[in-house]
Amino acid sequence: MPDKKTLERAREDKREGKSPSTQAGEFVREEMDHIREGKHGARSTKQAIAIGLSKARRAGVKLSPPREGEASPETREHAIQDARKGRAGARRKPSTKRSRATSRALRREGHKAASRQALAKQARTAAARRSAASRSRAAKKAAATKKK
Image 1: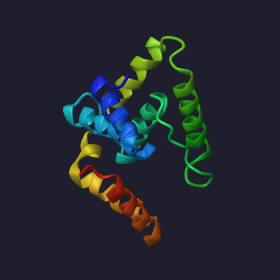
Image 2: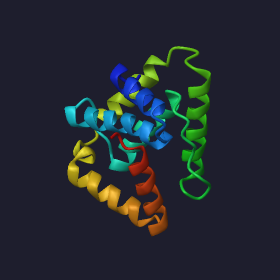
Image 3: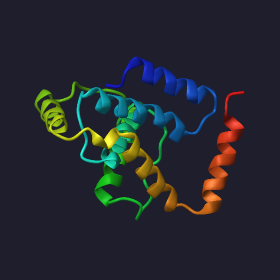
């Protein structure tokens, strides 16, 4: 379950008319903080981001799943499932055994995934996959919604 502060910051972003990816960024930031605090680890920066995005979808952020070919079919299915859970709301308590197993597995992973270097490297490779026009559009949109 995400922290109350994270949920509030994401709601504030939504009120300000910011994009779903910006709203989801709050959950990703929270995940990075958890890793840095030593709450758990992650195998890679990509995994840490994926955990944050999953939490965002389950919290009701209208984040679309990755398009066909962008990610594996399993990842896409999970994203669709998370979005569905986010719309439906919590129906029943999560399985204690599964929950504990997941957190124990993550605790065994390293903590370098949330380092500044790892995040910078991930950002560079992600940006390199996009076209110049796409990056330019995103920058213009960000500038337009930026707080004065």
